Image (cartoon, rainbow, N blue to C red; front, side, top):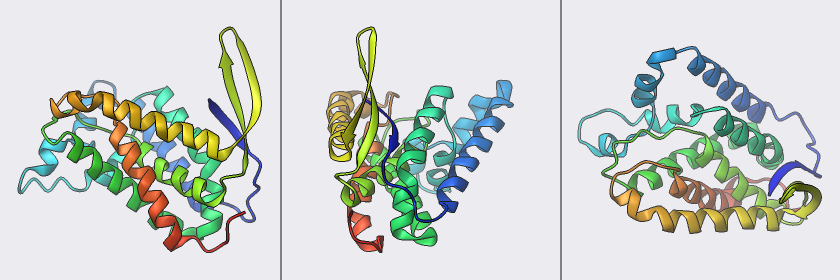
Amino acid sequence: MIPIKDDIPSSRFPAVNTSLIVMCAAAFLAELGLGEGLQQFIVAHGIVPARLLALGTGDWDTLVTSMFLHGGWAHFIGNMLYLFIFGDNVEDAMGHVRYLLFYLVCGITAGWVHVLSGPSSTVPTIGASGAIAGVLGAYLALYPRAGVLTVIPLGFFIRIVRVPAVVVLGFWIVLQVIMGLVSLPLAHAGQGGTAWFAHIGGFFAGLALVKLLARTPRR
């Protein structure tokens, strides 16, 4: 299922959410211009679990810098699509400052969960997925009955249907948990791959934090 639009309008301009998208876009365009230096840049600014857990490395800033980097067009567009659809309403419920704090805390929490799921890994991890997963968790708590226009591929056919948010986001987190459990042996072996546990950690951080930071009742 690929969401393309929800049916809850924002009551004000989502300044923080829009700024986050612009910052991620600027960082991605900068990455495209690095050429042969890209891999070295990702190693320096991505989360490397083994390096982060080593004493005296001073590498904690990567928990934030990694949130604004992406590994390719599909990674970037997919993340920004989810942030664009669901982030504005969560910002609406929290206010600008609280939403920014929420986003960063979810991203950092997601980073730590990823590190702990594979502490010996030397593979750098980048992407806003963990922070955006927190946004999805908050959206699910706030607007479970919201309608989400969703693309559903059916073989050679594509169908666009309106699906409740609880179904779209519930399916998403169940998939993350399944894939995370399947990939756990690889994570413990220090091998790379999708950071499923970052998604899981961010999502449940969002579920927990939304109760503290949201200012409007559920709709």
